[in-house]
Image (tube, rainbow, N blue to C red; front, side):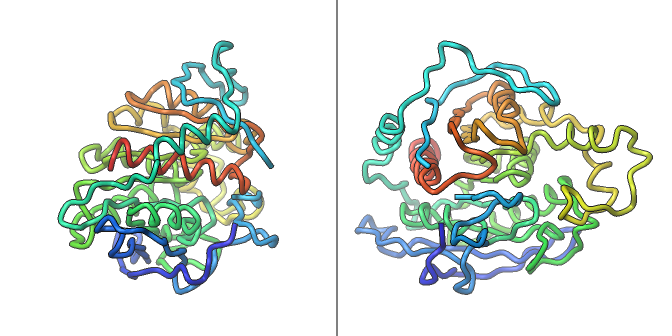
Length: 346
């Protein structure tokens, strides 16, 4: 799915963390959106750029998959299955898979032309956290949908979190999940001072590694988060690091993660002893998780386990989807997300 070039950002800002300067771009709904008039919605892409693509004109995931074939999805459910480091946890037998039409009806009913209510004509804000190796443009397809429904969207480059281009400071060899948590904390703190958004309604949204970063940040600062949206979140990262390096003392100073992302020792050591599921339930607000059942990178069982930990969580499993969503699944996920935000955080 390509971001339309007329979908240009509204503001460019610089935030700062311990890792350095963080390039941040913000997209705002049209003034008409804030007065209840018809929205035409602008497409979003910083400086008129398109979202990163996989060569076919569709946005690509951090692992080279198509990021954005007709799929079915299960109805939202609180799944209690436990996940092992390698295995798959099956959903309860009585959890029925909804048809495509049924899912679309649920999402459409949640929307039904609705937009969030506004305080002093200021829109609520979604802060998007990109996947490993990608950059702020990863938010563009999601932002286009959210802006059309009256939400402001901020996206940024994690310091050292992108292969190229990365408009923030830092090297990927000094990056880890924990440095990215610090980056998100810095951006969130800056966003809380912005006078052009409703700072009482800030939503964290993250995909893959950006998902676990958003989740850990919400746990640490629950009072700052109105809602949490996680797309195929990488709750598997600690298990992955332990499988990759059974002895953390032997981690090389530098290596290529997954064969293509240059990282340093800190990427492993920051998470080797860390148990993500022990750092989620500090956030008790509304949480939405969307995950592909056939994800080969982060098994869906990790999201099922997370849904059981959270106090107020809806989990949608998209059948036939991997690490990232195809075009039709993206459209369904967009409806789910927008309906969720309007009903729970709008």
